[in-house]
Each structure stands twice: as C-alpha cells, then as structure tokens.
Image (cartoon, rainbow, N blue to C red):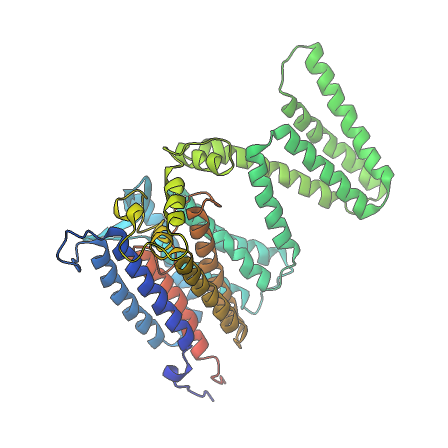
Length: 474
C-alpha cells in the first residue's frame, strides 16, 4: 500500500525560505539598478522592476502548481518533456526572434520566452530517468554514449542560435554522471581538457603538440614500466619526423613546422601500433587513443575560436587571458563591473545610492551584471550575505538529494545542483573578472521571466519529489 504524506508538512521550508529571500533580494537590486528618482510611480509596471514583480508572482504560482502535481508525473513524462524541449529548440531557430545577435526567443505578445532556460529542466529530468532505468549500466559504453547524447544535443542546438553561454551550462551535467557512479577519472579528464582549451589559446600549437606527445610517452612508461617501449616510440617518431623535415628543406616546400610534426605523428601511429602489438604492449591503444583525441580537441578549439566565436567573444577571451587590453571596448563591462563592486567598500554606499549603477556605467546591470549592484550598494557585507545564501542553498540541496530513497529523485537533485552551481559560479566569476563574459543569469536574481520561471520549476520539482520520499509504494 501507499502511505500518503502531508505535503505541507513534508516540504523543505528551509529551501523555500532561501528561495524567497533570494528572489526578494534580487528584486530589490533590480529596483535599485533601474530606479529613477524623478519617477513618481515607483511601481510602474512598464519598468523592469514592475515586470519582474509580475514574473515573481507568476513564479510563485508556478511553484504551487508544480507542488500540486503527483510526483510520478515527472518520472513517467521525463522523456516526453525532453522531446518537447528539443522541438522548441529546433523551432526557435526557424521562427524565433533574434535579440543581441542570438535567435533564442519566442515572441508571445509583449513577452519573450527563451526555451533554452526550460531545456535545462527537461535535460535534468531525462538524465535522471535514464540513469535510474533498469537496464542502465555505468560501465557500458552504450549507456555513456546515451548520457552524452542527452546532455549534448540541446547544447548543440543552443550553440547554433548562437548562445554559447547557455550551451556551456549543459556540460555541468558531468557532475551528475560522476554522482551516478562514474570513475573519478572522468572529472580529472574534464579538468585536463579545460586546461588544454585555455593553453591552446595562449601557447603556440607546436608546443602544445610537443607537450601532449611527451605526456603520452610518460603515461606509456608509467603504465608499462619499460623504458625500451618509450625509446622505441621516440625513435620511430624521430625517424619519420626527421625525414619530413629533411624533405621540406630539400624540396623547399615551405611547410609549417607544426604540420610537419602532425604528419610525423600520423605516420608513426600505425607503425608503432604494429610494433606494440608484436611486443604485446597492453596499454598502447589507450595511450595512442588519448593522444589522438587530445590532438583533435586542440584542433577543434582553434577552429571554434577562429571560425565559430564572434569577434567580441574572441576579444573577451583575449582580455581574460591577458592577451590584449581594451578597457574602453570589449573589456568595458568587466572593468566597470569591478569599479562598481570595489567602490562599495566594506558596507556599501546604501540602497539606491549606487552612482555607477544609477548613471548606467555598468551595461546589463539588471541582468548579467546584477551582482555589481549588490557590491556597490551593500559592499563586502552584502556580497558575502548573497554568496552565503547561495552556498547555503547548494549545501541544503545536497542534503536533500542524498536523503532521497529513489535513484530518480537523487539523480535529478544533482542535476538541479549542477545547473544552479554553474550559473552561480560563472555569473559572479565574470562580474569580478575571473571568468569570461558569456552572458548567463544569476539564479533568482537577474531580471527576466524565462530564467526565473525555469529556475523555479527546476527547484520545486526537486522539493516535490523530496516531499514524497517517505511514501511507501507497492
């Protein structure tokens, strides 16, 4: 039999209180960011703070509706919800409205709806459903590829819009896969590839390729503990690379040294593979495969940087990495953001007294750079409180996720945590100049109906599942 629980008593009121506090503080800062003291109507619905107030009321109604839905609905309809999200991402590319260079919005009357925000909810549900399914095996390649497809498909469609900031968020689901039981090596590989991404942008490609080859040889020695295998690989590589260098000089081809090394590696691979098979070197396929994948990744980063990213996105990365300085151009947003936060000092200038904010020195001050208003008007104390509330919320969500009795609820909980953590980290990181400006909102804080509603649905589905965790099923 199934024991029904009192949902009002079972809801995690601590999390609800944190949600309400963040929404309230966010609205106060939106009000401060766009407030004009010459306006007599402080609650003008045509202003951003007026619209945000309407969206907050709607978000609370959405939270109540989500909580009234039977918890089994989210499990059984996870895949249909995901399919609807994918279809909406396809449709927005065809009939969507382009805003700020991205075709990411549906226009519904006077309201713009961004499907990419709701796709995060759908992807969290789909991943939870698949991982909790009976035939899922974390050690099977088919399962891993399916997980990868579920997470990456919406990211690709969003990147085509193009909205690279929102697309990046979907890669945070690697934390969900890790929690599902995948090896710690997955996280290590992710960190290595992130490092390789930035190294590719700041270091000459020849040094990158040489470094990858050295690491592969070192890994081969660690795996096999026989130096002759490493020496054999070095000799084969030296023979073919040296021959290509000699031909390049003798025939005066003028090929780039980088391409000569790449060609030498590509020719050496099959030769050394034959040698390794004859010598029964067990880990050679893994080492060569990792080296080849790393090379392809480095090439893809170079391609994406020059051929996919727009010029302003390239310049933002260059400014972050110290490759160029443009305080009055593409570095203006971050420069003004840091000035605004720094000017707040320890206790801030006071509510509605932020000069950087009031005189519009900080662009997008109510959306992507809402944290600047907190820093300027509330200072170190205010920013610490806001960060503390977010950290407290994330810790609370981890506690909630870990106490779930079903795999579906627990995995979905970590999907929520991954999305919120990524938004929180990247948004605040870009406002203080630690991360590139990629334009994603601060959860429950930034101005916008789509993001607020999506984050609210994301969170309250988790709270609904948690409220039913003590029910006994047949």
